[in-house]
Length: 157
Length: 323
Image 1 (spheres, rainbow over the protein chains, first blue to last red):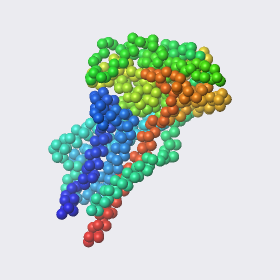
Image 2: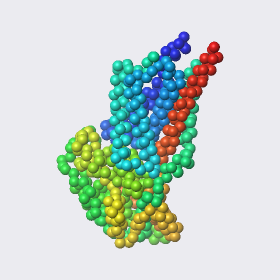
Image 3: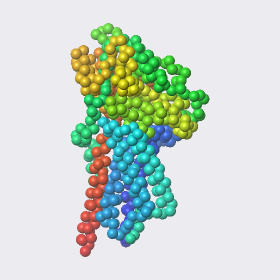
């Protein structure tokens, strides 16, 4: 019985929770890179003081990125190995994959930018910052749309 | 059952791998990231030579006057009320601390040298870190690091968020409200002005001239040159005089190398510290903690793929056992 229930889920609960939690902390710590949480009293909320500590949000963002990268690789590999024949990626799935690809690549470039000795052109850095933020905002809207209108990442063949 | 076990092992294995890499630094990547010391310009400041005449402070103000802000009043009201208004436009003569209109000042320290009470004077400004958090962590890219290591804030782009000041171990950048790009965006909701700090006279340096403070100094307190050379000079001077060095390793290394006849711990106790008056405490490499995680980001996808492969192998075993 339990086995059947487990098999009806395309993505297991642990993966789903990791995705949601990691995305939540990435978005929160990501927005925390801008000096907005202290200004708008959010860091005054008990337990949320860390949102105004830039090196803390910076570190948490990196940790979240590590988990997110592992999860993304797992999802893609899992799909290619085990699900490719039974399911195909939907249009909304491809849109989200494209957005995440842009976010991950710009994020990786920003990580490289932060290393000692890296000296990217200032215009390129501004471009990376705006692309990273812009794509995240679009991704959040698209995700909300997909949640409301029940658009799945994959469907049965 | 097989699926649950491999997810758990994915979590454990993946995290262990990431943590393991994060905990140790990888020698290869350090070499990749090492700054080109022959390109970075550093300044040696020999504290024992400084007489506190403030010629450097005056020269800095004179030469940089055209870069100073001209804020228009009244300033747009900022929301919420707690957003601090920082206005130095009517206090431009203040030169006993850093302000948007004073990027260099003289710090005084009463210390004992060979049993005699002496006053040491120390020119203080931006340290021009080798890996400057003000540049690397500005969310808009308004702060830039030039190839010669000079870090400067572009006053046409800066929104005055003040994050650079908060991540600077010495709180160097100073804000002037009511000027800059934020006025053209959402002046009540976002931004606050522009941040100002020493830019090492980057434009003069580009023309082959000396920074104004170095040119004006009658006592040759400062020497500017390639970082490697300056470090050698500083170490030689410290050895020769039994002196102490500050700025070589602080915050992962800076391009401002102070040499003092007394330990910096003593100097730090003796100087007046506070807003616009930076300390002389030891500073750990603030960017290192997160930068050390960068290697783990390379391992993470490998761990994810390994987990997916592991899950497939486990499931195949379960299926074949069942059959």
